Length: 328
Image 1: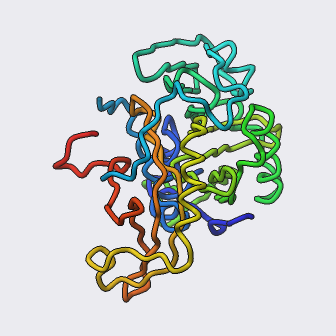
Image 2 (image 1 turned 180 degrees about the vertical axis):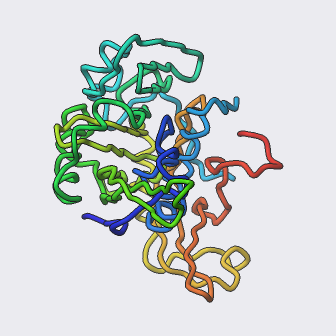
């Protein structure tokens, strides 16, 4: 299924906004509010913002009977997931170019490889082809090679690209397409605004055996030569026992399942479904949990959702902390 995020996603900051920035805060990926509003899975935005903060150096450091499961457990999609990467193999695996002299730094959370005009960050889960974010500066050669003909063509290229790097095609859910444009004007003639097209971005949500995984996503921007100029993947292996627990929960959560009245209050029930939550790439140790996600609307038709266990107890352990809260 394809979802188009409109024909335009402009950056308020002009062309300067696209230089050296990461996934989610550049013109070519659309404004934050556009992605947030159009996505059916609000936590994709949380994941993108977490990656953005991490890439800019801002590192931070209820009982359902379903235990949290670490990465040592068996997983439902394991092919190609344990490949250790350095910048040489990174270029081979992702076809993501790093020009000039490449500098590498690493810590317990990320490995960062920086070329003359590009940056790629791999997350320690361990370092795999399933958790990565990368981008190119506006001056990078791959940014000057033109763009695919349209959003539909880019989506098909993106599907093939992800299959080539080991993302299972049967786990790709709905696709969201953005058209990137940057606008700016000279100081002397502020009324004469010019626009520069920055190609297309396709981001897939994830569904495994019919169960949505709202914290996973796979997004890429490809140029006309089928070379990635930007990339964002969070696609860790799903533990088999968590997937089994989710399937069992689906038996209980039918059309008549409802939240407790003290949680739903005056909101209108839209639907309830079982989803699997997982921690963000920069949150270790990795944790997983099957929950019931209930979509609700306000009187103004604004949609929200709440995650609970089967008893109706709210699950918040995977949500980004508020400013007054500590990181879980």
